[in-house]
Length: 249
Image (tube, rainbow, N blue to C red; front, side):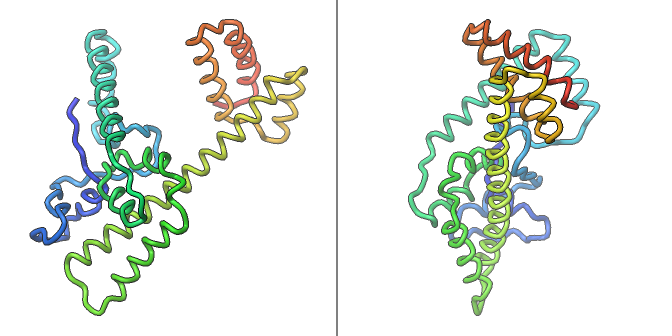
């Protein structure tokens, strides 16, 4: 599987209306690409193995059909996905996380755009008000400078775009964590209920049943089967058959 790496800094600076300038201090100006890369802050594929959404719907369908028909092609594709995932995991773990807010700014600017979601989750405690305050102060310093160089203009674009991506990413991550906690609590309530039907009906009335609970239950079923906990898996599958009656998928 071909792999291309575009840092957040490089993706931000891929603007056709900018005239390329020689790098003065930072190497990032040499990382501009002719084809813009789309930054997807939060999506269904946090590992980014399949890359950003692209055109060619018919071609993708044909590729998917070929994988379904050809077991060797499917195995090769799955192997490439695993290898790419492992490569990116190793690269991620090898990166040194800075101790300062200034260093963390550069860390995110140099992060592969596809890795932003994962790094937001990994470094969420560091993405505090103090950190975003540091970014805002640097933005203000550039905006209110008496004179601004071309390098300062590029820096301003980088910082404002990164600030937006990180703020949106943090908001989505926090919501996801909150939803996950709620789903766990509601699933536990269902699993521990002595009168499952009554419990489900009460939860329906309070609009407490959603696809997140079903997804979490499916994950627990898969985990139980992997661990050879057949009795637990069978019990949860029975719960699932009751749950799906009250959830619109």
